[in-house]
View 1: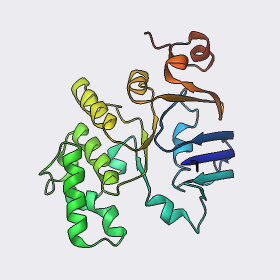
View 2: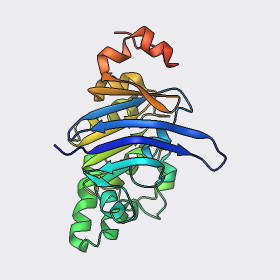
View 3: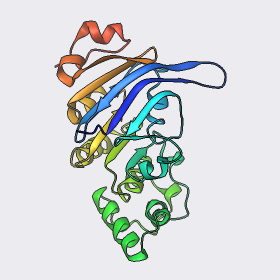
View 4: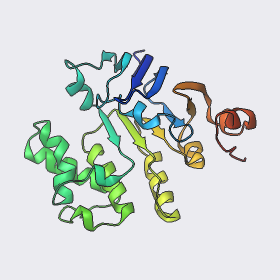
Length: 238
C-alpha cells in the first residue's frame, strides 16, 4: 500500500538558524486518523506546513507516493486540505461563497460544479444558506466551520487541522468534534486538546525537540504518565 504521508529524516531550520525539525520519520496510511501532540514550540505547525509545500526542508517528503517538489506540488495540494488555527488566516473574500468557491474555481471546474461543491460543503459544516454572508461578520465558531468548508469543497483525500478546537466555547467545540468525526478521510490533527484527540484519533504522535519521540495507540499514550510527563504534557485521565 502506498503511504498517504511519508517523511524520511525531515529537517527544517528557519532563516534565523533555529532548527525546528531535527529528523522526523513518519508514515501515515490511507484512512488513519492521527493526532499530533507536543509542547509549545515543538514544531507541530512547522511540520504540517511541509505537507502542502508551504515550507520545504531537507530530507524526503512524499504525499500519495509522490515527492513534494515543484513538479508535483500543485497536484498534491489539490488532494490535501489544511485548516489553519486562526480562521482569519484562511478567509479573505467578500462573501462566504467566494471563500468556499476559491479552491474549486482555481481547479478550473465548471461553474455548476463549483456551485454544487459550495452548497454541499456548507451543508456539511451546518451553515447552509450562508453563501452571501460576510466572513468577518461571523462568530469565531462560524469562521472555523467556514474555514473547514473551504477545504471540504476541494473534496480532499487528506485533511490536516491545526488546533481545530482552540478558542471555541463548549457547545461549538462539541459540534465541531461531531462534524470531524463524520468526515471519512485520512486526518492529521495537531492539538493541545487531548480529549478531542482521544475522541477523533486512533493513533497519536508526540513531537518533542524536533523529532517524533512516541508513536502509538491513543489510549496507550495519553494515559501513560511517564510518556506524557517526559514530553512536557499533562496526563489525560481515564
